[in-house]
Length: 443
Ligand SMILES: C[S@@+](CC[C@H](N)C(=O)[O-])C[C@H]1O[C@@H](n2cnc3c(N)ncnc32)[C@H](O)[C@@H]1O
Ligand code: SF4
Image 1 (tube, rainbow, N blue to C red):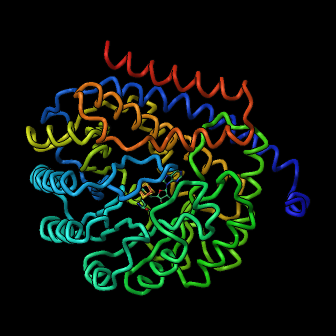
Image 2: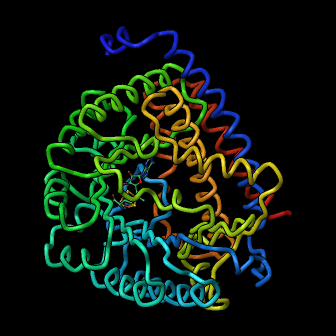
């Protein structure tokens, strides 16, 4: 580490860390006010005139929120897999799909099926994929998968006929790191088998890796990238574990050095940055769904849509989601309009997401920190919305997976645990959460 520190410009490092910290705090406050407004619109009755149906939609996101063993670090909307919930959910998802297809002209769309673990049930995902191909004739289809679900080569063969890009969540090839993030649903061997089983069977195979995990060294993550290159993977997405913007400045500085080292290492292996987090060896690969278009539709619990200047979010709890789709065919629960400068900021964020220029690593890191903060706010919005709906609909608590958000947030304060730090975290979160719920209930 000290060698790396010496070889890079120390003043530049500190300046980048300071700028990114200042900007992320600013971005945090701005996005917080937007998400608070979205939250306050809870249960706004969806009306047909809420959205302009002539808007050109090029991207369709479909959420499948079930996992066999939810990981403690994960902040996406996911529930513990139960056959009965899964089957009921998939029925509603198909109903919602029928509905959006009749509402919008979805021609040559890019479909992104994320989760949760969309491949958690082989029959279920193949049936959904058939329905998608029948209804929307997609341009491309991306599916997220957990390594434990990619052992069966017959299933992979079937999947490859219907899917263009497969994204495998490996997270790390180091058992110690898998243990730190509470990843108990697969082993390192499962990941190696999954990658070997799927390579060359899909147009693109992407592997997700995590960095900035507490206790993870630069050597650990460089070793992961080396394995990726040796296996012959086309694309790797390096996610920094979501973190609050008020992290210790030393930690931001350390992350900058890690990021630089990683990018330099990947460039040497011939991986080119496609975005600040996604690197590929082939120029024609497909990126994250959101990059593809400025208007997108999301179906499934907790999905977010942007149609023109309207932002809509579906219900988050399974009960609310199913109730809404049964009654209205769609499950929009939160609707708001992007105001004046917000639309420009939204476009700016989208442009930033596409930014991947290895010649300016400081800028890439600042963008990475901004996106990391934005996703952190989205994660809190998700968690608050789910809590709100759960209280509102008085559903049984066993339908809720343990929050994956508190864990990554806490992971950042545990290594420098002090009474002052802990008090700051606890108070901020309690005030934030209570404030949002109270505002939503009384507005
Ligand atoms: C929604 S998950 C789906 C992946 C799949 N279920 C699996 O088991 O790997 C997509 C990716 O988001 C990333 N992710 C999840 N939680 C995260 C967090 N707290 N911070 C950063 N990235 C996260 C992980 O790298 C994960 O592979
Ligand atoms: S990262 Fe873990 S909890 Fe999150 S979606 Fe994948 S399997 Fe589920």
